[in-house]
Image (tube, rainbow, N blue to C red; front, side, top):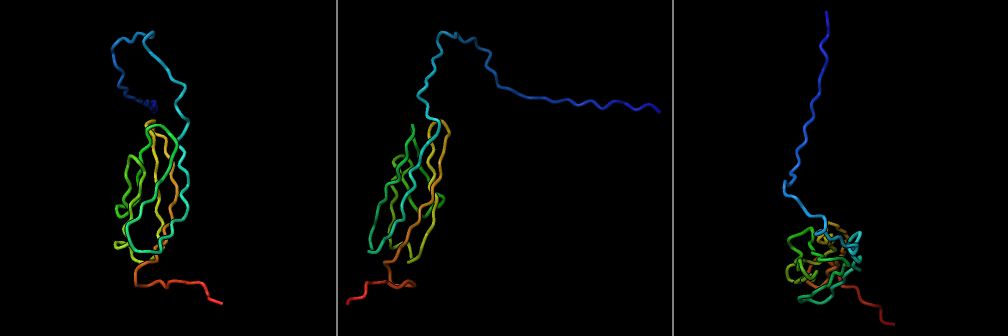
Length: 130
């Protein structure tokens, strides 16, 4: 009995443009950053009721921002976070902030928020008077 050979076929699709490009018109920039740098935010402690803002900062070209939660509002263009203590019960919160540049580079950093302003489950700790 004669065995038949196994033949593998591999196909790949490319969306190549058929237009001719004049290489004299191409320009290349060496100013493209190798990555976006998100400065890790410090712990954010809130001890009085109200509305607070926190500025997340990142270095890069055309950086946009987002968080991993719809509860924590961040301006995608400026990185300004707005938090209203009336919507956050006393607790410790951990969120992640993502910064991404126009080249697709991204950086993620944790943001720890301690809210201790509302009557509820966390005591307010004061210094002992001597």
